[in-house]
Amino acid sequence: MENSDSQKKEEGSQKRSPFDLIMNQIRRKKSFAERPQRSSVSRFFRPAENEKKGKGNPETKESEEKPEDKENIGPESEDASLADTEVCSVVGWGRVKQFIQKLGKKPDSQSLSLCNCGLTATDVVELATMMPFLTLLEDLDLSWNDLIGGALKALTFHLQHVNRLKTLKLSNCRLTAEDITALGQAFEYIPLLEELDLSWNSYIGGHLSCLTEGLQRECRLKTLHLVDCGVTADDAKSLGEALVLLPSLEVLDLSVNKHLASGLQDFAPALRNAPRLQVLRLHMCGLKQDSIQILGGALQHLPDLQTLDLSCNKEAGGGFKEGAAQVATLKGLQSLDLHLCCLTDEDMLALTQVIPLLSDLKELDLSSNKKTGVTVQHLFSRLRFLPKLKSLLINNCNLTGDSYRTLVEAVSQLFELEVLSLSWNKCVGGNLKSLLDPLVQTSSLQVLKLSSCNLTGDDLVDLASVTKSGELAHLRQLDLTYNDTVEDAGWAHFFQDTMGLKELTELDISLPPSTRRDASPWIDSLQGFLIRLPAISEFGLHRWVLTNQQRECLESFNNSHKRSVHFDCYHSTHRAGQGPLEQDS
Image (cartoon, rainbow, N blue to C red; front, side, top):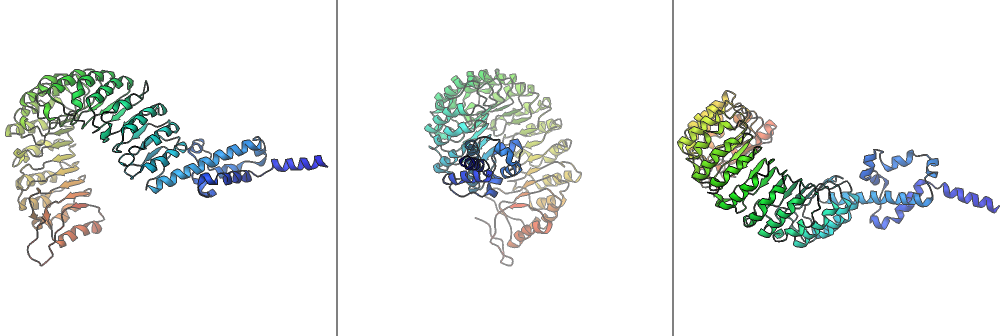
């Protein structure tokens, strides 16, 4: 009898429902979950590994399994352990989802962007506890949360749970020296990291070695951004020493570190340890004449370099007459940015010998070098040797009449040109037609910038005439700002006659800050103009004074024609019948 009772009891134990097992575990985990979970919730927040297996929701899986299969799983303790793992994962992902949605973001098991979410140190601690449920995470962006500085250590320790991480962005987070040290120590947890962005954290300056000392040999880092990090001479030296551990580095951005130049003597030679470097940005780094020569010696070791940005280094002027020759070794260079470098005539003559040798060059920016207005003419005459050139920016270069005419001749041979900026060159005014004639020979122009060029009414008539014949059909952006020299009749003709710009999305005709003018002489022709531009979405009208009725007409245009044009203009207090228009102050 005892044997019979014992046998029945044992059979009853073995035939316990799988649902009962899981429910028991849910009750045990209730305190961990901090809230009751319904089966409908767990159904949608199955951990990512189930997605990889492609076996559907946990409830579906259990309902499809036969009772006899359950009996073969093993002892009750193994069932309980499995159920325990199931519940932890489901509940954990539910917490992650709730946390992310609270911040107005969408949960994703591979990419988590909490950029500019107002995160606090407490949020970082909470996020750290969720790392075990984000094992598939590859991209993490916490940028522009300036309240998390000093709390990063709470997170970095848990990065061991996300060892698939490839991208980590922490720009503008007010990171402290302790944060940088903790991040350096966490490199061993994230061996697959390819992109690191620490830009706009000025307290990194003087402590960069705390980061570089944690780099692992054969690190896979490809992209490193350290913009405006207060990099010192010692930091530059530490970074140079660390380059030997970064053989895969392709993008290095050290822009807006004004004291970098003082450590360039130690840093530049170390660039030979980054032979795969494709992008080097040293914008506004306090480079001087001798810096250009020092850097020039390192360029020969960067055969794959495609982008070189040395812009806004005002004290570098005069250094290119000696250092420009090394640029010629960059046979694969596609983008060269030298704007606002205070280039001298000697610099420009040296660059004239070098730049035409860069046959793969696609982007050239020489803007805001006002002393080169005459000598740049020699470079323009050789632009025909750059058949791949797509972007030419030479605004505010104080071009002379001869330089402009040479440029016009060169443009006729730049068949791939997509972007042309001539803003702030007054010589264009009254002479636009000579430039438009060669421009129409290329069907690729997408951006034309003619801000503050002293344009005349005749210039706008010529521009409108070109569009009538279907030329410039691919133009997308047209900048005509700060041309207060155009009389009202010129604007009226432009809006009446311009057509064929089917791809134009942005047009700006804003006036200079000190100017106010009545838009009434041409406003009536504006609606027809907009109808003929089906793609336009941005229209700049700053400092053109409109009546309330005229503003209402613009606002009703979108409703009437099912469009979404954004009219960027000032409000006017003028009302119909109140007399003259009131100008904004």
